[in-house]
Image (cartoon, rainbow, N blue to C red; front, top):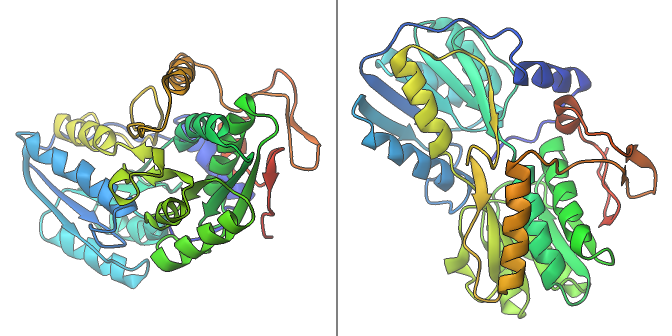
Length: 362
């Protein structure tokens, strides 16, 4: 869950530069005993974004050098975040994770005040000598779920409940659609915006509106199982997000694009402990295991599972999800044949690919 802030071209360029390691600070002194603090924007029981982060946090208790591992939930993207991070740093926490995009400025401010503390900000683009960022190539997993949806739809209409029209969400919708159209060129993906990350009622209503116009599969970039529950109620299928939400809609849930935050959290903690940490950002994907798929539901046949596994191994091996030629929804070539978008271009993606029905609000 991240505050809705549109990326400027300058911000996107900054992200791209950071991702290739420009300006990385030198390694720091080893930290014998880690005291780790997390701040969350929603309750750990949200069944989505924060829940996924907390599952990753818990794995840090298995590391012998982690002496304290705590979280503070329901922290607003405001001065509230500044206050909480300042308290944690003042109380001796030497590694602090800020898990929402809207914490970026507050994290930067507090990091400057506590140069001996390491700060990690999720999904942002600003760094400092003692502050870095971490995120994942979720679009890779989205593409794989698109393959499933493209194979399983009967009506060739797939609904997508989307949170906010920012590049991260647009990138995911496009990757999903590329997967759908790879196996089913006749299918379309209809997008509805909710303008919220976490609102069970609104998310479910958006899914219901898509089901009413013919969608027989519902995908989502939302934090609750509401869209999947809507699908199950009318006998449709669904694709989840963040974690395996199959228990909320077992008859509908085919799989989900999921986060494995433990991969990043353990790696960062080890680097801080060993004194090898630098502020070079993390942006890992399927190869590192930071993103992946939830187990398949019983309705997904073996041939689809094998198709997805083959595509997964190809991506791990270096195949690109976004590779030209790719047209936008108006038929214009946006990625020429033989070309691949740069990280900067991926982070500033502001168009829908061919096969998406819906608009990106300006």
